[in-house]
Length: 108
Image (cartoon, rainbow, N blue to C red):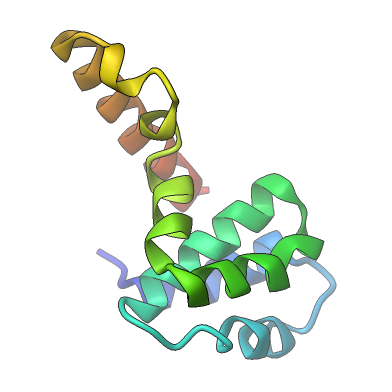
């Protein structure tokens, strides 16, 4: 199994084609808090979805509260406003779907 740092090194060129990976990493290094590689990987995933120009914004968000970018990247459906009104069965389906979508993104 790859570590978050190894996955990050593989995903940066995919998400930021034509950009120097070292330059992207320097921006990502603006976040140096808890779970650094995992949070930086989450930022890259969010940029893959929202556009690479969002990189500085997501780094800034992570510096404020790294849990935000983790939740948005790894648990997007669990962040739905109606989460607490879902049945236990539906919540389990959402959790499974979130895990699967993140695993698919990592595997690409």
